[in-house]
Amino acid sequence: MSGRCQAAWEVGVGVTYKSVQERLREAGIVMSKKGEVHRINYFGGLEETALYTTSLEEALTMGLGMARPERL
View 1 (cartoon, rainbow, N blue to C red):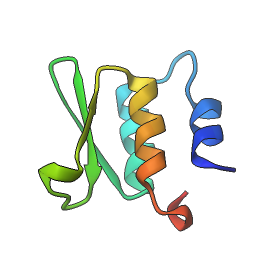
View 2 (view 1 turned 45 degrees about the horizontal axis):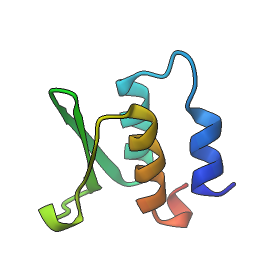
View 3 (view 1 turned 45 degrees about the vertical axis):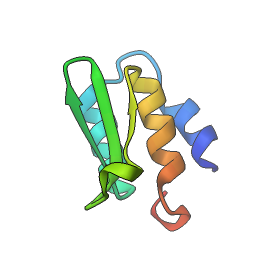
């Protein structure tokens, strides 16, 4: 299943910040939150590779899109 299809399938009613964070961690992506802004990056990634969004659904989609295929 591609990252986009998988993200669309996983996001739905009852999805929490913690569940998205754990899913991305399994895929090798770190997610943190400051206020309403979610920050997505690789483990040990520099600021230049970080992505930001206010949408939890978008955070999951972007994070899975960053992940290596073998980690999905």
